[in-house]
Length: 115
Image 1 (tube, rainbow, N blue to C red):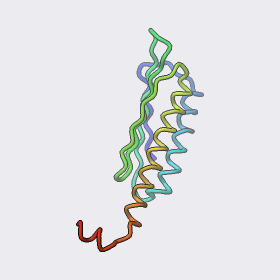
Image 2 (image 1 turned 135 degrees about the vertical axis):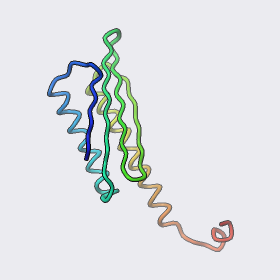
Image 3 (image 1 turned 30 degrees about the vertical axis):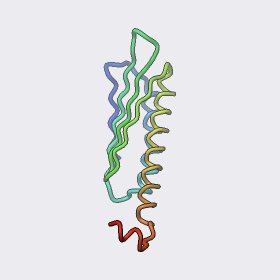
């Protein structure tokens, strides 16, 4: 998995970097099971605001036909990272369910007549 973490002129700790990479491994594990042949690209954008207490996090994941994007704003950067990863995991699972439903759709006379 190709991971790019972009800290927008933000001082960060090794702990924050480690936390982000561990969470992105969760996304990688799920995608390797559902789309094992496609490369996985993930971009995580972290933006800390000095004027207010809210931090913005955006995660973009691309693999094969999947293109998932999630945003979150939270006073705690770690919680914002967790939230965007959970949102992307939900999108991946939903897309996999849709693909499975399309693949296993039963052909009937009515459905073939409408085509």
